Length: 128
Image (cartoon, rainbow, N blue to C red; front, side):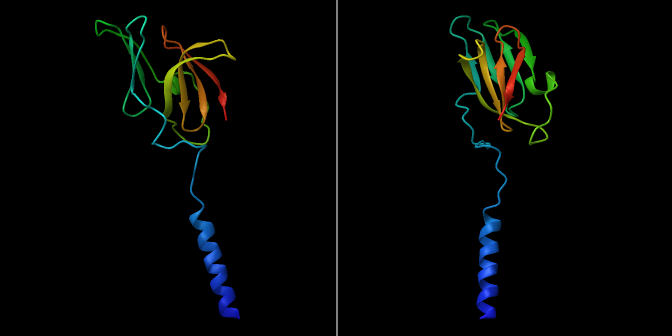
């Protein structure tokens, strides 16, 4: 009887431990990013997310850099859930509830906001 109890507790604790993975919201490195380059159809300006998923660079039709930003660091956003978040969503968006238009940015720590296409200024809208 004691042996069955010990085996049962061992199996139960093993199953519990297997289920204890660190998830932050629903995001991981296999994110929703479809393309690391967005092209504005009106201006022809390209917005490029670098491979580290930290910097966004704006390049005009002639190849000139207009601006580059690290939205999280440049805006002194406080650390939340992870030490250094990376971008997991990056796309053009018209945000209905805020009235802002630009590039929607969501980090793997669930912080999010809108990046202004013309200036690169980031408006932090919150965290989940």
